[in-house]
Length: 100
Image: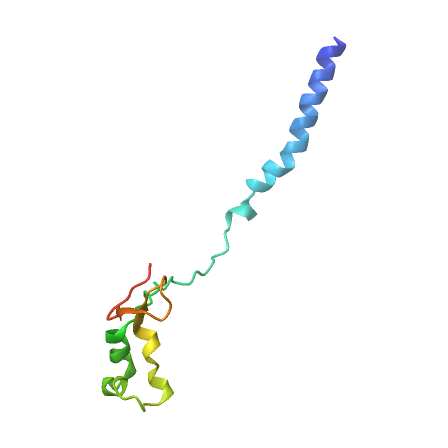
């Protein structure tokens, strides 16, 4: 008889301890959700580089051929492909490059 009373007390105790958390989840106050504002995700454009995109964005593509052009038009090293095994050896010109 004492065992049944002990089990009944333990079960009642566990139910009583869990009841406030259950009651808080199912109360009327918790059903009213605060409306959250989300920013719209802006898809990022891929970073396209090379001679052709640089000429389109630069404004004056003739200045890319001018060796005395101002620094805002960039240097020739920005659009060349260099051989990693032989330093200083140029493989070619990057017309369009899309990293991924």
